[in-house]
Length: 181
Image 1 (cartoon, rainbow, N blue to C red):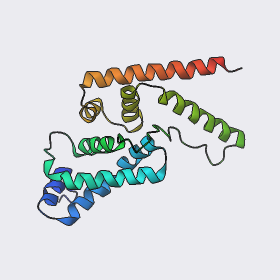
Image 2 (spheres, rainbow, N blue to C red; image 1 turned 180 degrees about the vertical axis):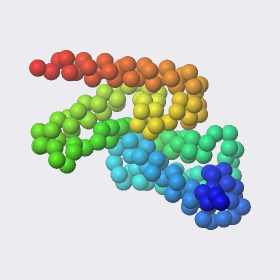
Image 3 (tube, one colour; image 1 turned 60 degrees about the horizontal axis):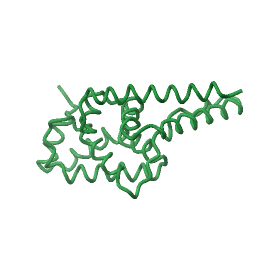
Image 4 (tube, helix red, strand yellow; image 1 turned 90 degrees about the horizontal axis):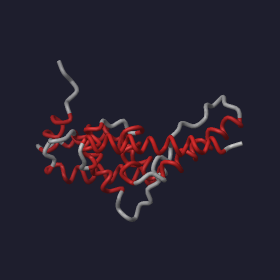
């Protein structure tokens, strides 16, 4: 006996008027939406607002969802469109690296923070499409096909954006290391 409904089944149930079905979709996808929103906005309050706006917009637009892409891809597209509005200042990858381990020395914690700042600064310098592709692939875990759907590009372009973005990051971060005493 199957107890977990697919996204498609929940969408159909929500369209049919089941108020709990959309709640299940929110529960299933909120964590990923919030994580991406946080990486785009750089703070918890804006990320929370953006994730909530995304689900409100998705609920209002559920009738237009055609199922040609996965629900998660459609949801990511809504989130990115909302994030691009001028009132938001995008600060990608605000939480690129994990904080230092709790048992780390103060020096290790300081170095971990410095490394996060260096990576954030290098990512911020990438061209927009490369930055977004790196964010979606490396930090949100989307496949190239999903990235292509979200960004409205081909899978090959998504791969190229990621390759060139990572190459530029490696050069920027490697070059910074070489200059340090």
